[in-house]
Image (cartoon, rainbow, N blue to C red; front, side, top):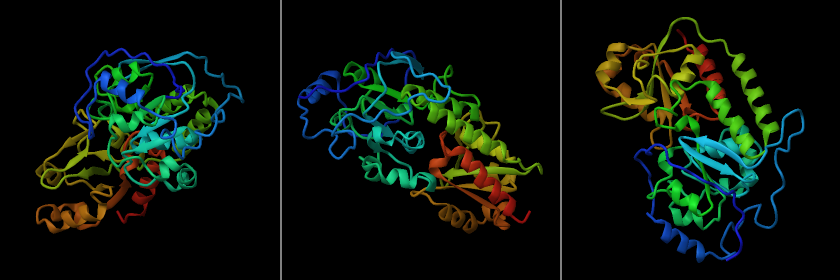
Length: 363
């Protein structure tokens, strides 16, 4: 098989990884190695803009930032990952990681995207249309290890730790043995020593900065952080002491934004008091009886392709108990697309959008 371009990665597990990986086939190191040995140049990265030649260098430091000195080692959710060079062939899993690279002008590095949570925002639509791997995702779930390795990536950039398991895109140790680096969005780290508690916009901006360093794209990262800080600073939080429930999914038992994750961070910036803020988690199950008793002033409804805001409104208004909530009676709904609910480059725009929706309500 042809030689592979890789960012050599050494990963040492420090913490166990949690549960969920929605995926295809479990492979051990021997099976993955056998798969790699069978790879051929005619099948890897077909249609990817980097396949026909070396990718153009991205993010060379130019206005006061320092170019990345490789090897670069980062501690990611308890794993030390060493990059010997800027990744050139990246598999992104979840919208948050795909949109991060697009926003940094690194779409040419994406050889496959998967498990996207919805369309990219309008601000990235033109950029995404130019990246075949984003325009036509590899999978609508976590891809299996065979599919990932068949693309010969040098990095798998995952939105959740649970994306990187033997039953998912491959476990981190095995992928490292095969020369494939892994990086998980730091906001999604679950071990107590690494989970942001609470998540802040500084954490979001820190990921942008770190990804910029990994890819030697510091200028693009610096510009993006400065732009987002300025936009966030331009939002005046509502000062009326309005309460809100962030309703993500669920019927008999709603799943809501709790007190330390992206929903709390966004509501704080908008000026809304989260009625589930005392739950020490990013998301939590929440009894309807509690929601009805709290009687929030507004409801923030997550709009997902599999559970739309319209469906939630119908459910709320057709149930005799929830129909008596003030926010339901008065139609006080704010909506947010699901991809904007996880830590990433869309959070600041989500604040702007929700603040505008709140201002438009007749309260």
